[in-house]
Every structure is written in structure tokens, then in C-alpha cells.
Image (tube, rainbow, N blue to C red; front, side, top):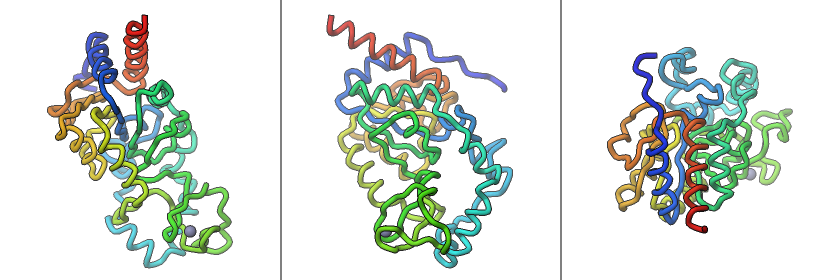
Length: 265
Ligand SMILES: [Zn+2]
């Protein structure tokens, strides 16, 4: 790979750690870069799944609604595709674990993830909004409740919601589908409190997720980027920590712990 950027220095990590310790309400926004570090190929770009298999239709949601039975049949047939294989074996990486640790330390208040891979949950993260859904869940289009896919009987398609008999759909948000209102509301509430956003493995250019980070910045909050490469958001960032989240986040946690220890002693 050409021009592999240098990793963030310890001094850069420490400066960012000080910003985080000084913040009242840090949140994080995470994206595909964190999944890639767990072996999940990105959708776009070289080697991307959509590059290989073609982009899903931009009106996928409308196609599903027009024939939900066929939508479910397609979904069931594709469970063994290469598209799902990496998701089935992926494990949280050190970046996910470090973020969960930051939450347990009472530092990180909320994570908005654009990833559908379930890895923040598997790492033990509690306060989390999966803005594009979770591939392991299905969601009722009537009442909005979510269920684990394996708990849903598939003898009638589309399967009915066990609670309200409404129509179930994969929780992952299709093109053309509105982001579920409960998720958006949660994101908006936490973003409204936030004065610092850690951007993990995301160029923060996909809306609505990007809007939450920009809103915090516009209010005078800080943005800390953790990413291998420069991106469109880099010029707006108060600190840019080069490296994957699996490298940078554990170092950030160590630096934050050190600063807090020094303050107590
Ligand atoms: Zn329901």
C-alpha cells in the first residue's frame, strides 16, 4: 500500500486524552473502518462487497414493501452468501473492547455506530445506537420492537411480529428506508448533550450520522478522529490520531487512565 501513514505518536495520544478527560459528555461515532479491522470487508471501494457484487437497489425498501414474501425468500437464500460469511465469524477487536472499557470507566457516554455487525454489543457496550440496524435482529415495521432472528419462526413469510402481528423486516436499514425513529431520537438526545465526538473508523460523511458530529462541532465541541487515513472530516478535527482503532483506542484508554490516576494522587 502506498504512503502508509505514520501511527499517532504518544504525545498526540496524550493530547487527545486530555481533551477527552476535560470534556463533560464525550460520545463516539463509529464506521466501517472498525469493522474492517475485524475482518469484515467494506461495502464500497477496492475489494468492497458492493464493488464485487453490485450495489443494492437504491429503492430496496420500496421493493421489499411491494413484495415482502419475496424479500424474505431472498434474505433466507442469501444467508450463506459471501456477504454474510465474514459477519458470522467476526469478533470484536481491541478498538471495540477499548470503547466498551471507556464506557465502563464513565468516560464515554454513548456510541452511534453505522456498522451493522453487532461487534460493539459483543464487546459489552451498553449505551449504543445502531443507526443502520443490526444484522442479527429483525424489526417490526408496526411496533418497532426488535427480535433475534433465530427466535422468529419462518413458516409464514413475511413472518408476523410475535407481539403485534405486524410485518417483520431485517433490522438492517435498506436503501430508501427511513432510519427507525427510536434510534434517531436517541442519537439526537445524546448528540445534544455532547461536547466531544470520537470518530472511529469513519469519514463521517454519511448522513444522518455525520450530522450529529457536525452539530457538536458547530456548538463549539471537539472532534477527535481515529482513522488510518485522512478523510473529508480531517480539516474539522481538533485531533487526528492516525492508525486503526485497534491500535489507537487501547492507547487512548491507557493515557486517559494515567491522567485520571495522576489527578487523584
Ligand atoms: Zn410488532
